[in-house]
Image (cartoon, rainbow, N blue to C red; front, side, top):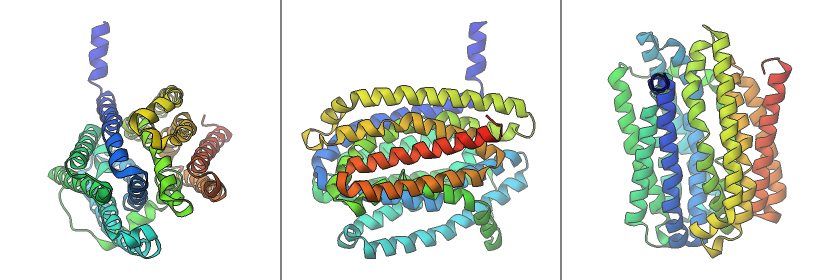
Length: 417
């Protein structure tokens, strides 16, 4: 009986996708434990801070390229995946929209290169940050999520991280090689993006983009894009914000803690990502089954986040000393504050992914994220010039707590929770 049950669970597509995603997230946590100590010591705090600043800019720019399609396109494709003509039309409109977005990303990088001193004096940092963002934006993660083949995404993400790691150890030798770190990440991402597009178009007929349909895709995902863009103000763009308010040294201290927390946060995503397309598939067919699945994902994700946050906070002094060394001792308290993100983000992310997006509450999520992004920015302006990396950490945690609380209160008021 028990053996049969185990086989049934392992044969379930959700379980398979979640397992694959968890495997790559564990890899995502292990690999930085190898590369970060090397980079922190070879580049030294100021150059390490410059790399972190450029990567943060790339992550923020990639939000433009992604444009919320990982949610909106996944949702649309999951509901129409049995109709090949509809799938081909959606894919065509999304890829056309992404080409338009690439032009905007190039323009934004040129503006940043003119106004930001680090990019003005070291243009190669801006160039490779743009390449990272462009290749990330081209990856069709939304397609593989919609057809419940998240293991493909997991495998490709693992290849990117391995390729980046090899590039770091092969070519980064001194602080002047800071740009090489970005180049290795960009090239690994570009190769994987090309492979993913090839796999997608083996299953979906290729259609030349249509400008009017691409514009429709942009309009449909506008509110989700605003949510993602605002969310980036207190996630991926924090290195950029801190770099504009404080020195590269403080960016280095912040990112030493942030780089240990972010892989921990990524452990929260696989279960929610694996279940998200199934909930969208069930929501119109069996609402009660969709609700049961949502509750399961919520409790499991929050439980994982709480346990992970407590563990990370307790190990913070040991991890900073082991991985970064004495010059980064100021990062210990930063990491302890950022560890609070694990349970807070677990709650907020599950509420949006499992309850709000499937019910097309995109605008409500957008309001929570916009207000949280504003809170993060205001607190950063007030705290970062005085407290540096610690002030940025306090701002981030406060913004995430507001976003989670906003969503919880709204779902309670509407009787959904």
